[in-house]
Image 1 (tube, rainbow, N blue to C red):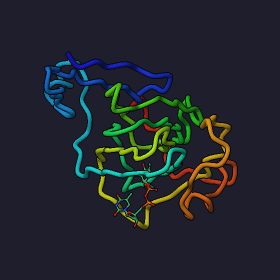
Image 2: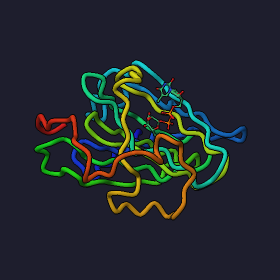
Image 3: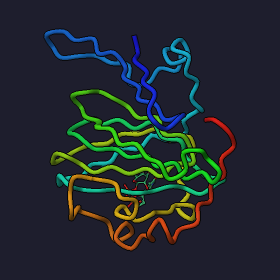
Image 4: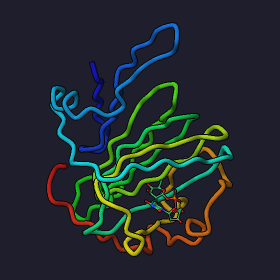
Length: 187
Ligand SMILES: Cc1cn([C@H]2C[C@H](O)[C@@H](COP(=O)(O)OP(=O)(O)O[C@H]3O[C@H](C)C(=O)[C@H](O)[C@H]3O)O2)c(=O)[nH]c1=O
C-alpha cells in the first residue's frame, strides 16, 4: 500500500510507494495515479519529468520557482544518494506564508515530496553523485524561472558553503523579493 504523510504545510505531502523486494533487488511503481486515487490523493497532471545529477555532496540547487502562468507543482524523489529537500510557502495571503518544511529524500528511504505550485523548492545533496528525479505540472519556461537566495530564510541546510550555480549565487534575498503567487485556498 502506498504511504501518504501530511506535513506542517497543508498541501505538501510525503508519498512513499511500496517496494517489492526479492533476492534480485526490488520493483516499485514510482508513479501510479490509480494508487494515489485509492489513497484519496488527486495530483494535477504532469507534463515534464526532470533528472539531475550533482557530483559533489553539499551541492545546493534552490530556492527556485517558475512564475505564473508557468508555475510548477513538483513530485520529487531521489534516484541515487540523499538530499535534504525544502519547500517554502510563498503564496501571498496563505496562512503559512514564509513557512517551510525540509525532508530527507534518499534512494534508501524511497520517499517522494509533493510540492504544489506556489512554493519555492530547493535541495542540498548529502552524498556525492546524487540524482534527483522530479515530475512537473508545467513545462520549463526560462523567462518565468526565478530564484531566491538559499541563505535568506534562516533554513538550516547543514552546510555553510554549498556548491552553487552562478544563478543561485546572485539570487535576491527573500526580504527583497516580491512573490508572484497568490493564495487561492487550501491546495
Ligand atoms: C529547470 C530546467 C533547466 N533546464 C536547463 C537550463 C540550463 O541550461 C540547465 C540548468 O538549469 P538550472 O541551473 O536552472 O538547473 P537547476 O539549478 O537544477 O534548477 C532546478 O533546480 C530546482 C531544484 C528546481 O526545482 C527547478 O526545477 C530548477 O530550478 O538546464 C532545462 O532545459 N529545463 C528545465 O526544466
